[in-house]
Length: 273
Ligand code: 8IG
Image 1 (cartoon, protein in one colour):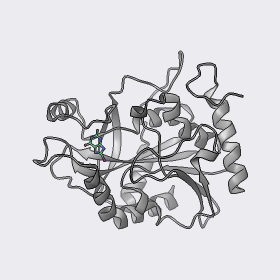
Image 2 (tube, helix red, strand yellow):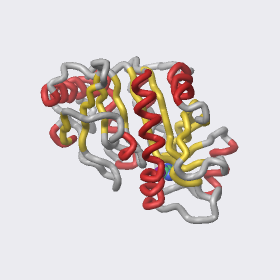
Image 3 (cartoon, helix red, strand yellow):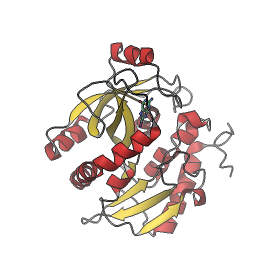
């Protein structure tokens, strides 16, 4: 079987099944329940979730690749929860801007579904459009604008995206932390950050957060029947919102500074899912 996701004759679901089989074998866990994708700034937070009893190199799993972003980890881990459920934690993601195709972008999501996960938590680091959201502010994603002009769905697959970011899971997150704001996430292709004019456009279109991930993954998760929770960590003011230029080191620093709050938040949300 071909595992080349750029080859149109490859069936991406079969590759996801093959990847899930390797994860089951290498973790010794026949199934996982919750998947967690770690975006920029979320790695230190996830370390507070619990002790992993298995860690797998991405490059050992069909069609997964090493991390392409500084501050991301090219491994996946299996964390057992106190109640017997298991969390599959992805230390990195494939971004649309890497040019590996949209099938690669959503492969981890399809693999999580094939591994048995009924819920996926998508985290990311992003730019904030609201001046009151300083670096280190976690924000729930309420909806999205997909400005990539791409879709992970192939053929005449018409999928409803109403309430894509499950109101039930957002409510549950707010029970954990009533101060959490929510907002509309806008995915640009990247890898350049936006111009100030593009940030003003995103605002006019109804956006609150700008980033380079998440929307294509959320669509694939909905197609696969998973419940989706999206949480952004505002690591910087979007271009033009703050007077200083953007810098990836600022992103990494904001992640470290917010680790305790975000880790506590993630752990308490996951326990309630
Ligand atoms: I972290 O300001 C992070 N990722 N598009 N814009 C976009 N992506 C981001 C940003 C940002 N910050």
